[in-house]
Structures are given as C-alpha cells and as structure tokens.
Length: 151
Image (cartoon, rainbow, N blue to C red; front, side, top):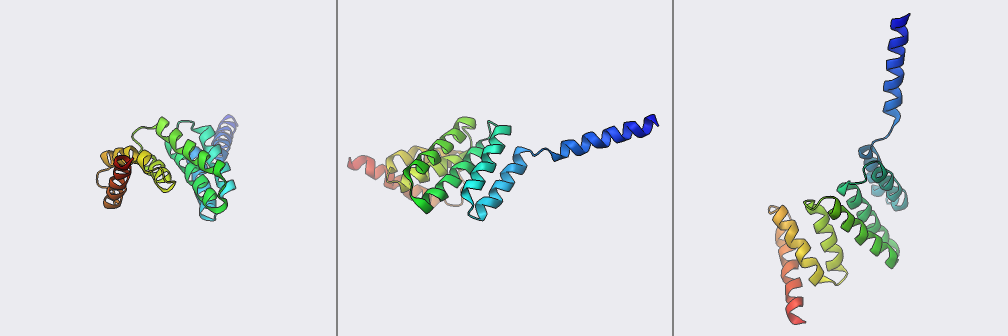
C-alpha cells in the first residue's frame, strides 16, 4: 500500500509539473500566433514567457518583431517605440545577441535613421561575420556612413 501511495504521489507530481508552461513553450505558442498574424495574442504569449524568463533576449526580440509587424499593419507610432524598446531590452539582456542588433538596426534604417543603424549593423557583423545577408548589410552600413558625411 505504501508503495502504491508513493508511486501515485510521484505520478501526481510529474503530471502537475508537466502542466506548467515554460518560457520556451510560451515563445513557441507566440510564434504560432505571430505566423497567423495574431500580433496582440502573440505579444501576450511572448510577455508571459518573459515573466518566466525575465532576462530572455530571445523573448524580447520576439516581442519586438510582433510590434514591428503590428506597426506595419496599423502605422501607430507608439508601436514603433515599443518595437525599439523591446529590441533594446533584448540587447540589455544579452549584448552578444546579434539578431537583436540586426533587428534594431533595421528598424532605425527603414525609419530613416540610417546613421543610428550603422553601429548596430557593424556590431552584428562582428558577432556574426558569416551572416547570410552580409553584403546587403554592408551596403546599408555604407549608406548610413554616407548620410553621416553628408550632414
């Protein structure tokens, strides 16, 4: 009987633990919602994941991407600020996370702030010198530098 109670207790604990969602699971669910263009729901899932892993550069980067796509859909300037803040937070969490450098640089670049994009793109290429879009990023860096010189 003791053995039965012991096994039942172990099974109960294992099952109750498996019901808890990890940040990884929440980020995955958020990505699925993002792919369905359900940006508000994706942001909510990513935010839940961040609550479990508050130093997740990946999580903040995902939130930034969701805000980017939501901004592109509705053009609300406050969404652009949230996008930028999320990418900056990703970089605060992990200064080696080159993906967020690319994303923040792209946000600045395509917002007409090409000069601000230059150091971000440069840092991304230092961290990932074999980036598959290296040539395009280098062109963007050159363009941003020419804007600097033209001021």
